[in-house]
Length: 260
Image 1 (cartoon, one colour):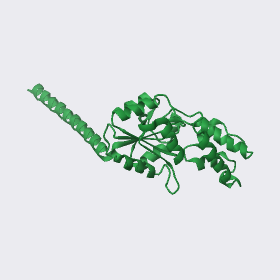
Image 2 (image 1 turned 135 degrees about the vertical axis):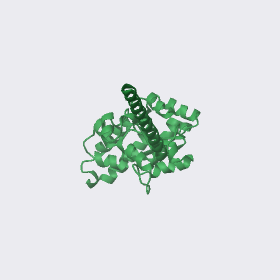
Image 3 (image 1 turned 90 degrees about the vertical axis):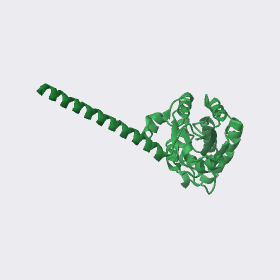
Image 4 (image 1 turned 90 degrees about the horizontal axis):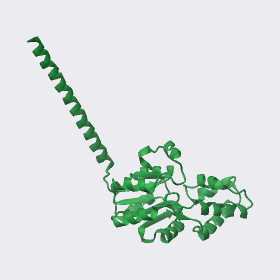
């Protein structure tokens, strides 16, 4: 009798434990659903907004060449490609500010900046090329009816010129830095691109290669995928607040995330 009651009690305890586990699982599922709802995200996406330099195009050689042409013109020390790599990401003015000793306090700063703009406008396609696999990725996006756009801190004329030459009809909107419009990481240009595409924030993802891109996506309310083949390393991106799951090392990995 005693053994029977003891077994019955043990059975009840086991059932209680099972019920607790089931409740925990239900709570986890509800939490996941809430997170998805709160984020307003669904996949696949209707649009992918790309950064340009270091994400779609390897522009470093031409940027460095134009920086050093300006340095030579004004008798200033030249910069290494690695230095220029670290300088880019916040627009042309900031690039030259970082490259010129003394920055904007240099008496010839505005002339140096103008020289760089003119030189880069003429030579922005000398060595620049799309990263391996990018054209195939953009073609896949077009075939699957996912919109593609570029939002960059590069000068607007250069962004549009490079889009027209390298990506033609594969990228629908291309927006760069313009007077009177806040540049990345402010969300203004990203929101303009989405408006041009007719896509809501919750149906788009931003793809870039820097801490600026990560913050841009956050400010715009978009998901973010970061590539480690560009101007910033994986370790740099992690230190900037990225999580491992949002960093990709190849176009194949990027496509996999876009398909989910």
